Length: 269
Image 1 (cartoon, rainbow, N blue to C red):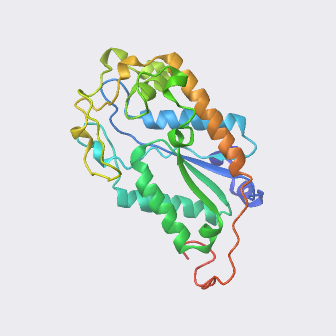
Image 2: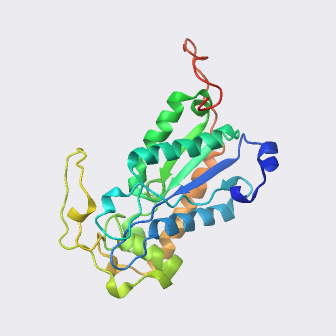
Image 3: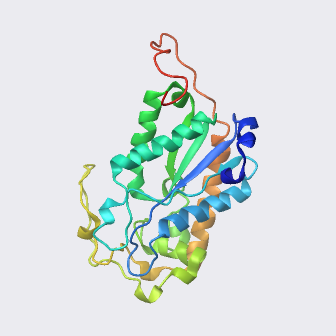
């Protein structure tokens, strides 16, 4: 089912115990010389649409939220971004709306790396501030994390070890999904590859210090065939996860837990 095509009485009458709301998250940002600004949105939407085709009776698919936390790409023209602090509030309000409507299984299917940190903060804050959200399954997962094993480089004949940005992986998937938008004659990475081993330490920095072109990896090695096998593998894994997610038991409050009545039954009230 498509969330936006339903009427409010449909939502009111729905059995929400097993229904899974899937809200794709993405961005509008630079993707090198060869990919369109909407790449992350097109990729995660392509995955979500194919998953929805398989699980249409169980999944409620929302429109993709195209605006993302992309300030680290603003040095490249064309990027449209919202600050991390604002993105936290945006995701909190979206989650609050789903929970207020009665849904208890909500997956934010992420397609942009910059959304991860603020997205996780948002859902954590919601669980901490509301009994209704704490009792629900509020989840955020990036498609490349969910399908990390299935995206193994050797399995798809990749020249590079993992997905990065405007890379061989993203370019191959775009060739499969939207070949008409890819300018392969302009595909090139950002110069010498720097191995960044921070030994588990997060180091801040904007994207223009990592690449001259806005792209990473070896996008010139991309093919439509690689993209097709990648998309199929990702869709298989995300579909499997959602099948499991729909059956996850809800967590009980453990004995001797205090302050049960200190938070509102509805988030934000």
